[in-house]
Image 1: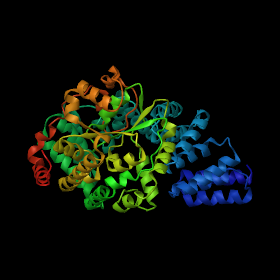
Image 2: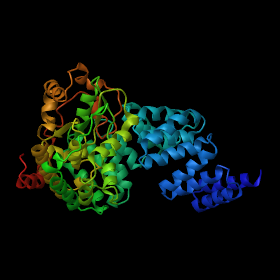
Image 3: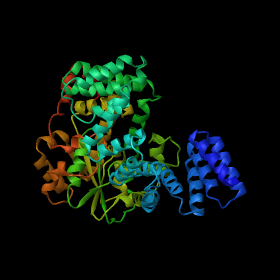
Image 4: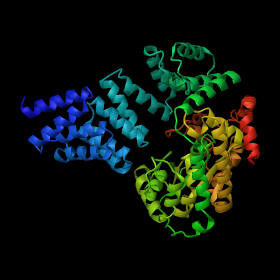
Length: 519
């Protein structure tokens, strides 16, 4: 073994021990001794990756790949950094170029699978996870990644099998219990009893039990044990809220600034963006209001494809504002972004999502939170289609409250203030955008899917196709909280669900009613 090989081995040992300063030191020493050896910048890239310095890590991995194009490890590490830097097209190209070279590397099969998953290419990720586990069975992090991918692909039985297997080895693992609870309706209290036993053994600190609280709330709801269910939902929300430095007033101020800035006069001052080869359909609304169901119905049409939920528009608005906001759309970000050229933003958006587009003339971007961005959508794309899902306010609020995702919905006071702001925004879009927005009522859609689907397709300029009624046969991936539900026919089980919790939700109902919301 020569000296550089010895330093490299030392660096790899340090990486295994997570001794990142030593990894960086080994990389620097190799780089000093032999600037043309790819191992130096590769080790430096690992050290920068561990420090969270995305661009620096990407630069080092790119340097290693530039020295030796055969270094698939550098290529996949670079692709991962590019994903985190929102340079999706570049990451996608790298992954496609190098995936065939990964056949004997479980580590990089798994990392490439994670990168494909972040890019929304779940079918591509699946095969990589399968191969990784063939080479190295029973590696738990890879099994967890595969289970997540299985849910997105509708392989629910496979996901259940993985989580059940993992729980045999780790019976107190709360996140595994939570994920298992989401995969099917509880038909008995067997799993509830298991989770209560876990909770009995768990830390008394509520913030350590958040996932278990939500899992118990969900399964107790399935069993119709409403009071117990709400108690656990409330415990989960209260515990999650206690960990956050969050003020709902910040989100409300951003919404009010949107109403102020995205006025009718502002919209008139549009550049007249030319029609693109593929026309976007933005499906928006509050989370849990039927946006995924609508996406599945429309994307089952032969002329429509879906790119799922993308954060691209949010990302471009933050970039256009040139304001560091920690990723949030604050009032200042909105005001600054409103001064940016809308046509350039549209062009950047199309460039960013191009890797996901096929030959269909229409594509769906289904990020519910784009309801905040409809002014920018309308200004940037005069030809874009917009579908806004509406749901009974109490059902909409409760559906968000009982999830573990939404920072404004962890307690009823925050939720009421956010919903009232959303209601003001909805009225603003109705008055300002008029017929540009197709409003669709969730309750009407599930009660009479065929009539509502025919009307919706007509408003979108699409001919009716039977496949849109048979959306449950659509095999395309779904990466949302509704990924399990939309694999079945439309149903009305969730309509008026809030009434089972009416006593507990009374403070919310009173606050919405006092704020002028029609219930």
